[in-house]
Amino acid sequence: MKLTAGKTVSLSIQHVLAMYAGAVVVPLIVGGALGLTPAQLTYLVSADILMCGVATLLQVWKNRFFGIGLPVVLGCTFTAVSPMISIASTYGIPAIYGSIIAGGVIVVIISFFFGKLVKFFPPVVTGSVVTVIGITLIPVAMNNMAGGEGSSDFGELSNLALAFSVLLVIVLLYRFTSGFIKSISILIGLIAGTAGAALMGKVDFTEVANAGWVQMIHPFYFGAPVFEVTPILTMSLVLIVSLVESTGVYFALGDLTDRRLTEKDLGKGYRAEGIAVLLGGVFNAFPYTAYSQNVGLVQLTGVKKNSVIALAGAFLILLGLFPKAAALTTIIPKPVLGGAMVAMFGMVIAYGIKMLSRVDFGKQENLLIVACSIGIGLGVTVVPQMFQNLPDAVKLLTENGIVAGSFTAILLNAIFHIHPFSRHAEQPEAVSAEKSAV
Image (tube, rainbow, N blue to C red; front, side):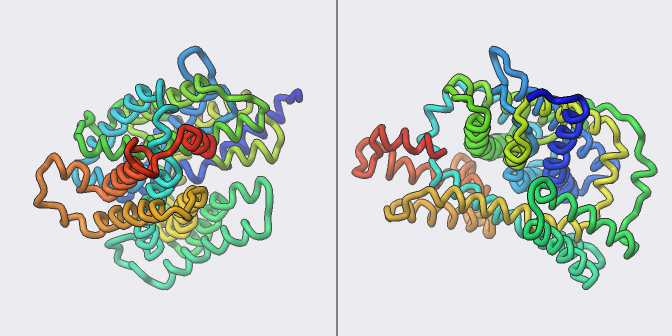
């Protein structure tokens, strides 16, 4: 199908709008949790939006080394939110970006043979990890709904009314609309909630007025990266889960575009993500993954041209160069964000449960893997001091709930399904089937 310039532009803007809410909420949550100043938060949002565009172009541009060449839109992954906040609280902000840079390098390295590692990350493992991550994010949403932890008006009726109004708008849009409007329901909810908050006198436009019109991002805005073992391990596990999620997006788009993906194609897609993550760390942005909401938009419009996605990436880069656009997102009140977070983080949990739905729970060992990994992950998150007397080498795997839960899931899956002496060890055919399901 031949597209006119006008239609290409309009379709590209639709893709930007479909992913925009998810892209800006992550830096707003992380920046708020880290106590960044308004100017720093504006920079963080700008860097994130610009790097989303760069990451998308890396994936669309198919060449000999990287790029899957499908209409893929990349954005920052929600699964990294809780780990980033946890890393910053223990090791500081520079350790976040050290872990992202190291994680990007690791993804590039394993991209050459990740297909052979998939058996270690079947749905029983990835589903458990995503579920734990989603559950640990919910307290962040609840605190924001009430007005933000430590705020003077915490729990006031006006905050709760705003938060639940935003959530209601999102639910109603999901129920009574379809297509493009449904795909941007969270963005509409944020806009409506901010407008309502402005009428209540809860929005301050000072930062928008103070923000410049043009600003270039530059490397290491928050200081030189710090490389610590535990944060790197944590981020690497998050990125591996993101690769598994992206694999599903690749196959969905391959099916939509009538293209049969090879292991070599997947490797190029993984390398593009690894490079995007590496650059995200250098420019103080975030880890990136393929956005499934844009797949729905491709299916909805029937337009599968890479040129549309490339232009969307270019628009994101341009948006990232205008601080006033970023500053507009930083004025969203915390209760408004909290209402949207419930839906967004709840979807992370729901996605984890959806991944677990592909697991054969007729096998008791699968029930045990899920029970132990989620139990350990949440237990360590709630009571982080329980392993404080263990040797430092062991605490690498126990001082973070996501790492502890992930390691438990990987270990038990290996014992029950991969170990050659296990009576439940999978046959090659079963492993292949699992890969196809992922």
